[in-house]
Image (cartoon, rainbow, N blue to C red):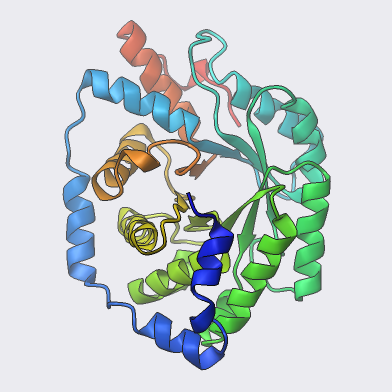
Amino acid sequence: MPTTASAASAFADVTTSESALRRFLHGLPGVDAVGLEARAASLGTRSIKTTAKAYAIDLAISMIDLTTLEGADTPGKVRALAAKAVNPDPTDRTTPTTAAVCVYPDMVATAKAALAGSGVKVASVATAFPAGRAALPVKLADTRDAIAAGADEIDMVIDRGAFLAGRYLEVFEQISAVKAECGDRARLKVIFETGELSTYDNIRRASWLGMMAGADFIKTSTGKVAVNATPANTLLMLEAVRDFRAQTGVQIGVKPAGGIRNTKDAVKFLVLVNETVGEDWLDNHWFRFGASSLLNDLLMQRQKLATGRYSGPDYVTVD
């Protein structure tokens, strides 16, 4: 499969100037907001039966980036989260591991040591998370430090102020620079903070901008604002990666983050994936949930399917 680098080169002609990039992004088809929201709502009503539900729960667990991004994070908390990622349900060793643990850069080394040999990735937010308001050398140093500490994945935030001011080339160049810093050492997730982009048209433009600049994943949110992942904005981003692959042959991952707290919601998102981009994305290499509390509800629902009893929150750890 072609790489994100080859995809970036395919769009070299539209990224040579601000005006060319603007023409391309504003030439994308406008989003039918009513139709988008109606389709997302309709897919959310699909009924999932017991066998399919059990499969969906395990798949969702395996797709979680188990996250702690608080100023009060300690090495002990990160080690406890890593232990939970590796062994989510100590009473049932058939429970899948999560995809990754996501932490601040200064906690990467702690997470890496705790996850050694487990196969669970270490993801680190970077580039002046969550606002993204810093000079490019600072963003690159932030990224470099996280990778040096052992990060397998970098979750960067775009400068929404620059994007909303129409400085698309500046945003493109910053993403490209961070991607170059990642090289083949870490996969790059680009966070748009969709709740601050105001319109669906802007989310579509940001999706294409991020993919053209070399993102391995496009991600909805930081989880730090009022509006985070929604079925509609995730559906729109899934449509973008589908169309991008059709045009370039390059597959890009999608990560909704923030506000997905229970099994019912997670299953709705998996239905969106299946119905929009298909089985190729039903894998944690291409789809993730950014979450902290979601795992507990998935575990409780998994226990209920296995035992016929609802165990309740006292049977899972509190993050």
